[in-house]
Image (cartoon, rainbow, N blue to C red; front, side):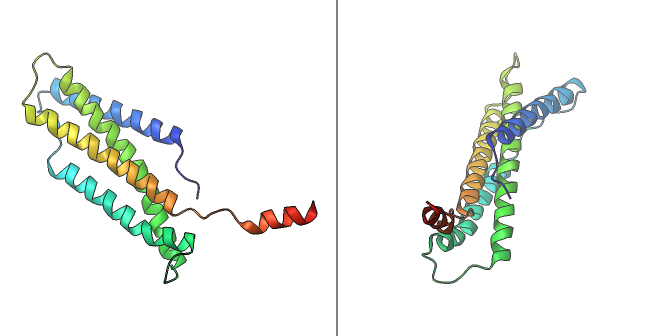
Length: 156
């Protein structure tokens, strides 16, 4: 599995921004209340980010050689996939939160201040999830093999 690249993060962020903005535009045009993220969303995103990093920490210790107990490779694979999905969903939700915030701030009459702060909190928590996922992906990568370097030196 390859680590998440910058172009993927940027593409998903832009996609989320467009979708978040267009959902609110469509809702307002049809007379339905705009989507304002609930307070539970940023709290949940931040908690998931903390859990992903906490799950990846024992794997980081095992790759550094400082672990007291060996890590099950199947668990390590599941944590790596969880880290990747967290970084991708964090990028998408960050874009959606920014799209909602962009829609709220571009209106001539601003809605309640709580709407703005909830959109900001959602975007910040999604950025924390993105960062937590990327850190956990880094924790799950193996260091380069020293055996390849030793073989190269023997041949030279």
